[in-house]
Image (cartoon, rainbow, N blue to C red):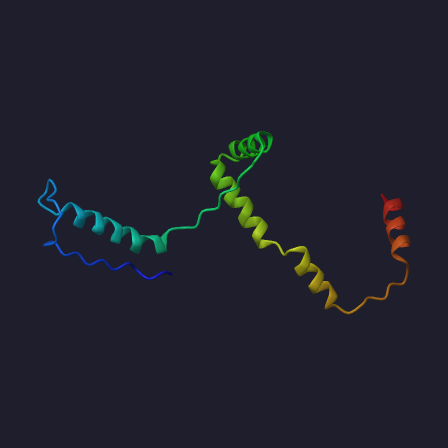
Length: 118
């Protein structure tokens, strides 16, 4: 998390006008900014995707409606599922670390037998 902002205000400085509630206008703006700075650490991150075709947007929107979700919630769920799966590089690294397996028959014969059994 980021560090909270620190603001020091000298209310005796020239140019600080009084607001409707008697508070210096600049002081109120700085307090608002201080609250924003301390709150930003708790805010979630945003991802923006540009150049999405109309067709893709329409398909995603239909999927979201069918799932009774907003488009943002639907895409977030899809991203969470995608992020939970290993990448091809991770799968390849895991397979590379495994011991080779000796089969009694060739892979071609095993696949042919499996197809013929259907």
